[in-house]
Length: 187
Ligand code: FNR
Image (cartoon, rainbow, N blue to C red):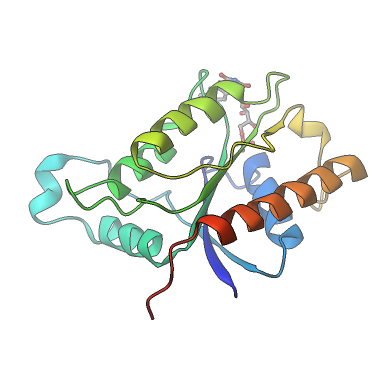
């Protein structure tokens, strides 16, 4: 069986290390996972007043989440927390009240930072929100990638094999997590 995984990257910039890491993870993933990047850059800011007539971008996001069997999050750390763009996507997907699109979908979190605390603060703030939206998030292995500027060559390939092997192991564990926790497909 193949599971569809929606991939969310918390950085919007083209040369993002989180985006580069996402691409590596997509290439290393086991065959049981089919991964697609979800665009969060153009989502209008969440505002409950718009819920009566929601922006099309919100509806599209909710549909993409609902169509997924699992969720993979890559986040930078902005001021020791999750970037606003990613939090905005989380909030939009959790509403309208009573229709939480994230509900029950097995997740995993990777944080990537140019610093040496490796996005720990963002990683765990994200986990806090994922608890509330009921995303069963893989506990181990954790993935904190620090010193990210040294991890990639110009083409976006990893510069060292140990990181690559770690990320392969991470995706294998996530594949098992998804197989164990994914809801039975109905169609
Ligand atoms: C940062 N950065 C950062 N890094 C970190 O380790 N802890 C932090 O709290 C912050 N805070 C922060 C705030 C803002 C507004 C910016 C723009 C940056 C640095 C951050 O790790 C770096 O820019 C990464 O390269 C961001 O990830 P991407 O864009 O490469 O994926």
